[in-house]
Image (cartoon, rainbow, N blue to C red):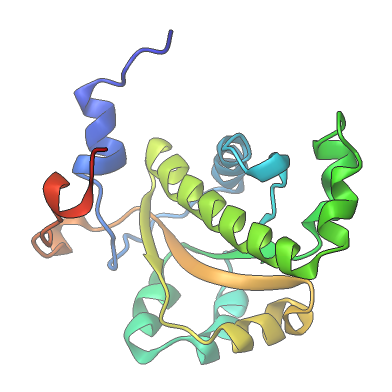
Length: 198
């Protein structure tokens, strides 16, 4: 039986975790990014589809390629973040199905023969994997700044050959944040406002 996480872990992952916009000049190593993905990959996806694709922009040159796609409010914080992840999804994720779902290799054809099913599956499960990325980053001591506020088509044109196969979903800045620059946390909905028990 699984044990519940203690309060310290819950604070790190949820209760005290925040979306950050101001970053310390402290790099994130490639080793930490590999550790990050090695946690993300274990999150569940439909038929173990694993459609999430993660492009880690670490260099000034890579960030300059991204800059034209950013909204003005996201420009400075993204250029100053140690890493910006383009969280994307692969529309042809099913090409890996024989490896990832070996007990039912015929599942590949279900997706390959239905572009609509493949698109829905890729987007939904790639989004899930983006959520796992945020939690895994926090678990490794990183701060996160997930965001939209960018032109997906410009990103896809610049980094993914126009998005014919891989499409951007959202961005997430990663690094070590200046916690002194946080605004007060915004409210959240209470249980009875968001949930129903039947």
